[in-house]
Image (cartoon, rainbow, N blue to C red; front, side):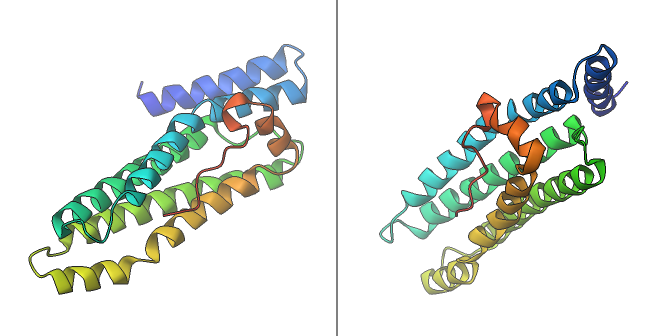
Amino acid sequence: MNNKLAAALTGAALVAALTGCGASHEEALNAWAKQVCDKVPPQEKKIQEADKLFSETTPDDSPEKVKEVDSKVFGQKAEAYRAIAVALDKAGKPPAEDAEKAGKLYAESVKGMKATAAAYRDLKTQVDKLDTKDQRKFADGLQELAAEPNRASKAGHDAFLQLQSGEIGTAMAEQPGCKKTSPSAGS
């Protein structure tokens, strides 16, 4: 059995077991939130580390160093957002009372995280293609990409914030991994 199927069945079995054994709706939702929120802090830490690394570059750094750092930052952020999308995907749709709304928020969150990961992968690819031998051309290339990191983060950040509303948000807020946590909307 492949890992993705096994994870999906495990998540579904957990929710089914909780609801089948007389556990309340709230307990099932809390179990779902725990499954997601246990995966968020390590990814949030990667995003924060990438932001810190990004902020440590200076205009005096060589084009090669700037390119190397930017590439690492974008790659690290792509992986972090992808991991959050995978965690959401594995958890499945939250067992909320308003199943239709929960399904929509869940789908938008997964889509937003995947889009953010893809945007950062694209930024990494673009930075990796920049020619550092011509400093002017390199600077122009970076200037063209300057606003892209904020745009890339916005979709994932907004989607995660939307998911953290209503009863889903209440359940997530009770989990240590989601307390005051949302993937950064920054460079």
